[in-house]
Amino acid sequence: MMFLNGCEKLDREIITTLSKNDVEKNYAYTMNRATALYTSLPDGFFEIDGAMSASASDEAEFTLETSDVKMFNYGSWNAIYNPDNVWAKYFRAIRNVNLFLVTADSVNLDVYRLDPDPAQQLIYTNRLAEIKRWKYEARFLRAFFYFELIKRYGGVPIITEP
Image 1 (cartoon, one colour):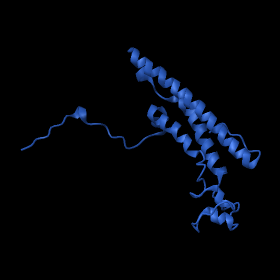
Image 2 (spheres, helix red, strand yellow):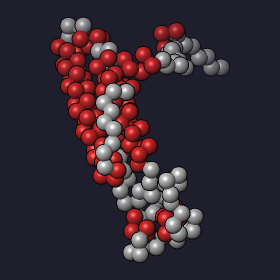
Image 3 (tube, one colour):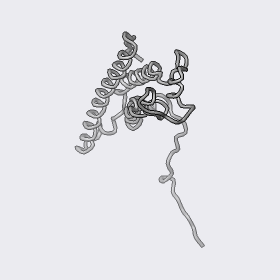
Image 4 (cartoon, one colour):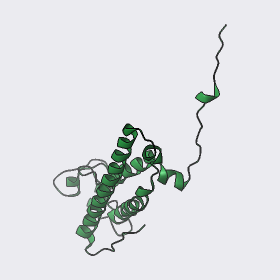
């Protein structure tokens, strides 16, 4: 016979919903949001449909007939059908950066700040420094996204508020 016992203190609270406030005040979620800003960076070598950019010229051939690069070679790209639609992609990324910059300072670190233990104070100082660094990284990414837009389109609206 086998008996299993448990106690209530081992039961963890299961969080099924998160409010905007919960996400903005939580350090781990803020770190995830800072990391997610990098997902909009260009992939580089295989940017369009998994094909090399050289396939859009006479330097290489991409063999998948339904690929976006083949559609470019057939002259099928236009203002409505553009697989390299960086306008929408980068302005979405800029909006995410702006939202991050507005909310990054609202992280609740009181559990470390109010603890008299020097180790907790060190964690508090390090986390503040990390948040500050993430904000600098976010500003750099926003500048990069604007650079890519200006490189393609010339003058673009500069948006610094979410």
